[in-house]
Image 1 (tube, rainbow, N blue to C red):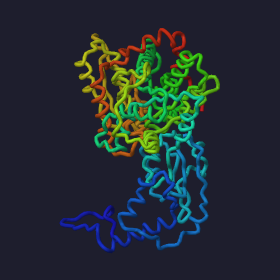
Image 2 (tube, one colour):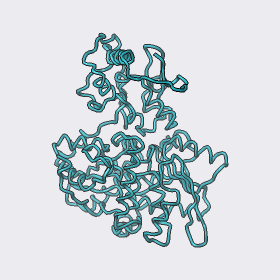
Image 3 (spheres, rainbow, N blue to C red):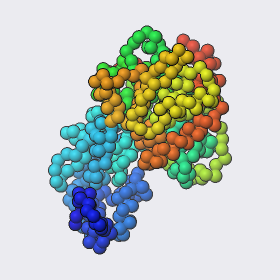
Image 4 (tube, rainbow, N blue to C red):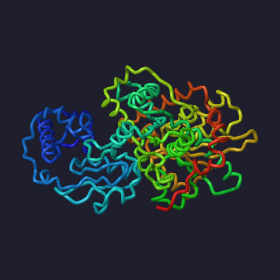
Length: 513
């Protein structure tokens, strides 16, 4: 058999990829993989969405002719549950290497690699140490590309069910911007439509007491981050200011470039702002109610699970965010409850934390944070000026985007870079260190495409991420409010709950790792 990938093409060459000989080889390889593979398919989180399962069915593998190997019988590899974000089960690994390439080449993290040789080869961290003791940033992209469930996202759904059934808890949900354009794909919506009204209806049927939107605290992030940036600019402090919305990016800086931490914004991520804000708000609002507020984040991101368990986000002995479930985790809850998602009647958010601007909504895509900040900068707050922003270079799926944007009539401009994917972030850092380029403001999202491509979303290639992005921009265009500082519930918040407490509730100073 000649491998087409390593054979130089010649004129009039005919390549046959579907012959009896090739199919026999493929079936033999599949049977050998299955002979040493964990076959507990009914309880596997990848069941029904497993590439090995799909290919075996495609080639009509209805029996495994080889006996289960001694290695498979021993089930010798322990499951690594040390990470807050992902779980590793090496017994399900087929050594395809997708996770290794994603971690090393795309994300430049290198937390896992091939180890040992021959029959003993496996994918694991260096010295087979727990994944939590490596430089893993919890982005979860390894789990997103794993075809067999050898790496999966930690499941917090049981804890959420327990909270819903606990009469001593008031269960509050916050839904991230990217979730609304990803969840529908799991229920037959083919064009990544914004299904937020149906999500709200589903959450209420599941038993959530109040349903809010993380876009509200994204608006707060824009205001706080813009003020922080202007303050640094006026005082002549070292720039650029790096965004802090993405916890995987923050952990990456802590691990690989701690010298840059003073330049990372002190703003909490929208998720953590919401947690501290809502718990303080509920404490004041329900003084006579002894129920404990339990905050559930519904996120497209696995790193949010790690972020929610950082010690910096503990207030009075309690975590600001109690549980984080992914987009797929919410879909599992809806399915488990027997809810027919497409037949739900649309419902609206609760207030005040359900009101948001288009600026907060577009946080779900790469460039969204930057565009929202620019909107706050501009003086001419009209739809025409917003349309001009999208042609500045801020939008698009490119790994690194850089541009200048004028901020006043005098012609002053800020130089901006927008990055998605940690490998691209590393390249930008090297460019800055070499002196080739200087920036005032840098947005970084760890996942390719931004949050729409998060590991907690339904798996999708670039075209699907692009559709999700387009759906967010379309939803932004339909909102009545386009600028974060136009959110009518934010000024009363600064005059009330946040008065003298804005820094305490909305900012964080990370401890050295």
